[in-house]
Length: 90
View 1 (cartoon, rainbow, N blue to C red):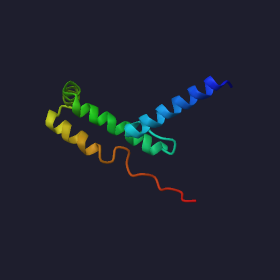
View 2: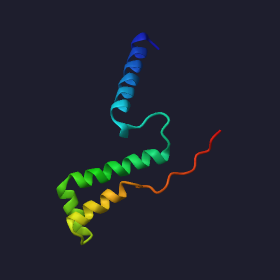
View 3: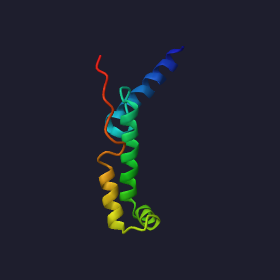
View 4: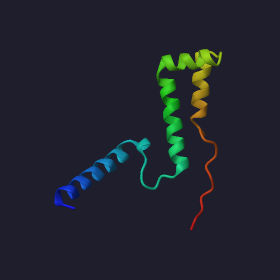
């Protein structure tokens, strides 16, 4: 490995660490599968609520009012993947 490759790798890792610190949803090295799934679900629900055409689409598809769909998505954001699994402390 040349010094250029090593500095490129260090630069990429430092950029990744910066993004992970700035944006919670990008994950980190110690994130488990459940936490990753929760982030994905919450981001999806937030996007649905934040984009009116998507919200209207879901409301029409489920034959509900737009306000009810917004409320349902906000409620689903609390526990999007159910209760967290029990941790195995070592």
